[in-house]
Length: 478
Image (cartoon, rainbow, N blue to C red):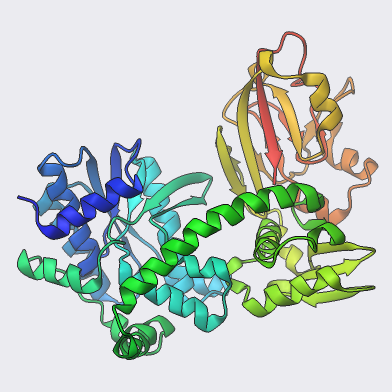
C-alpha cells in the first residue's frame, strides 16, 4: 500500500512528465536522508507496479571526510544490496581538482559529481539521473541567489529537470522530491525505520548555504504568515513558466540583434539590442556571455545592469566582467569578448572528444551541434547562399565514423574545399590570415581517416555535397 509521501511523489512525476520516454534511471545516492528516501520511495513505486522502471544507484565518494567518506560509500553499497538495486561507486579528489582549477570546494565537488554521474549513467545505459533535491533545497537556492544579487531567471530556483552536458555526453537530471519538504522526508524515514548517514559538515556555519539553512531560513519562516518554503516553491514555479515565454522572445531577439558570433566574441547591433524589454536584454546578455565561456555563476545583478546600460551609451564605453571577460560598445555595436588573459582557457590541451550525433558536444569554449538531414528535402543551392562560416554540410556516406573533435596538431593535413591536393593545416591557416591565438583554439573535426572541417574556417573537398548525396551531416559551431 502506497504512503501519502509516495502518492505525492508519483503525482508530481506524472504531472511534470519526468519519466516520459524513460526506462532506466540512475539514483544519485549520497547516503543522506533525502537521497535514501528517494531510493526507497522509487523502489516501492516500482515494486507496486506504479512505475515501470529499471533502477540503479551511483555514489560519488568526494574523499572530503576521511574514513567517514569511506563509511558513506559502504553504507550506500549495503543499501543497494538491501533494495536489490545494482550500485556503481566512484572516488574523486575534490581538493586536488579545486586547487588545479582555482575553485571553491563546493563548486569543485559539484562539478566532479555532475560529470561523473553523467559518465556512469551513459556507461550503464540510463536515460536519466534522479537526485534528492526537495522544496527546502529550492528555497535555500533562491535565497542564496538573492543574497548574491540575481535577476528574474535566478528566481526560477531548482527546476523539476535539467540537461547536463559534459565529457562529450548529455544527460537529463530529474528531481522527483521537489514536491516535498525536508520535514516530510524526515517523517517518511522515521515512519519506515529508514537508516541514513549524517554529514556533519552540513552543520558547519563556514558555508553560506549552511548559514542560510540553519539561521536565515528559520528566522524568515518565523516572520512568514504562511509556509515560506511552499510560497517560495510557488514563486519559482511561476517564474519558470514566465521564463519559457521570455526564452521564446529571446530566440527572436537574438536572430534580429546578432551581427556576428564566434567562440570568443559575440557582437550585437546596439540599436536593435536596446529595443527589447529588460528581461529579454538580460537573457541576451546571459546567452552571449555564456556562449563565449563566461561562467553564469560569476555574473551578479550589477554586472547585468552595467552591460544593459551599454544599450543607451554614446561613444565608446567598456564594462569589465569576471574572469577577464569584457562588454564594450563602439560604433553602435555591443561586443562581448575574452581578454587576452582569458584566452588561456582556449589552449590546445583539451584532448579529443567523440562528437554526439543528433545532439550537442561541449568542447572547451565551443559547442558543436551535429544533425543528420535527408538530402532529398534540402535546397543545397539556397544553403550555400544563406549559410555563415559556423555551419557546414557534409556527405555523411563519405565520412568514416566515429566523428571526433580536437585541437590542431603538428603535421595535420587536409584537402580544402575547392582544391585538388592536401595542404598542411598550419600553412593553410597562415595563408588564410588566421591569427595565432585562433589557430591554437580552432576546433578540428575529423572522421576515422581524415579531417573534414577546420571549424569556422574551411570544409574538406572529399566530403562535399554532390547530386548523389543521400544523407547530409550538418555541423554547427556555437
